[in-house]
Each structure stands twice: as structure tokens, then as C-alpha cells.
Length: 191
Image 1 (cartoon, one colour):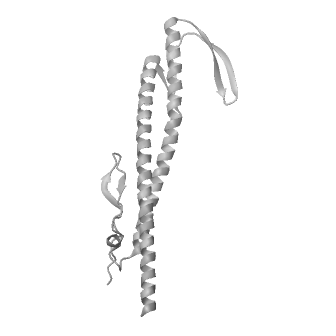
Image 2 (tube, helix red, strand yellow):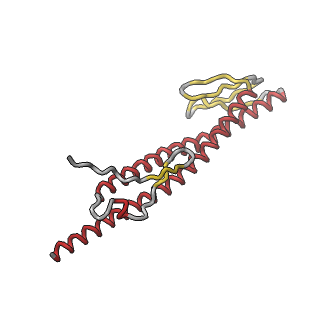
Image 3 (cartoon, one colour):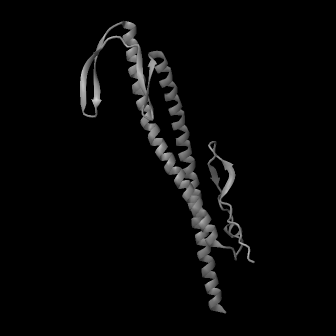
């Protein structure tokens, strides 16, 4: 019965604040693989799997960043509109505006007194809020989106570093294996 060696460890116990593990930089390739008779193929496979996981996390984070970068200006514009409605209500004056009926169809209308606004919450859900409550909700969502955007950008920088370390590790193990094979071939030719 042959025992299969466990794959070498490619990440450390350290992680960033959101739990993304830190890549292990391979100082000694020979020790990492398990000596001159170690399995370089297993080590390369393990490193490639780790690299694929980091790249998947990076793609997910890039999509999340894109979504947040779209939401932040949308929240800002909506807050501005709620503030305009609040000012017009306080001044007691009607105003004319343009309503978007569809992507290419607009209509002009006059707005008298506004007591509440309707906010899309997502998942085809819209709720009515009094103007002050709507302002509070939107500013909370805006600050939350900005904080999330900062964290996603930090994660992306961290992931870029881990991908680089892992790619360097793959290259070092591959080069070590090529040198070992060449050395074995030369020794075989001398015998």
C-alpha cells in the first residue's frame, strides 16, 4: 500500500480582514517540494489551484467594485433629488420637472407639494418613505456603499499581491523541476 504525500501548503495562516489567506512565498523550493525526489507535479498542481482561487476572488471583487462604483453616484443623485424636494416643500412652491417614462420617452409635469418619495429597494420592490426618512435611508446606504467600495479596493490590492507571489512560486518550482530533470539527464548520460 503506497501512501500519497499531502500537497504542500501554499498559503499561510495569516489573512486580510475579510479572510483572504496570504500566499506563502517559497524560500526554499527544494524543501517545499520535499527534497530532490519530491513530486514537483503535485506542487505545481497545488500552486495552480491556489492561483485559480485567487484569480476567481479577484474577478468576483472586480465585479463587486464595478457594481459599487455604479451605485455610489446613483445614491448621490437620488439624495440630491430628495434634498431638492425637501427644499421645495419647505418653501411651499411648485416646480416643473421632466419625468422619464421609459428609456427614450420623457414627459414634463408640475409638482405641487411632495410629502413622500418612492424608493426602489431592489428585487422589483419599491417603498414609500416620508422625505426625511428617505434622506436618512439613502445617506446610510451611500455611506455603506462607500465603505464597501474602500474594502473591495483593499481586497483587490491584496489579491494582486497574492497572485504575484503565487505566480512567482509557480515559476520557481517549474524552473527547479527543469533544472532537476536536466541534472538527472546529464548524470544518466555520464554513467
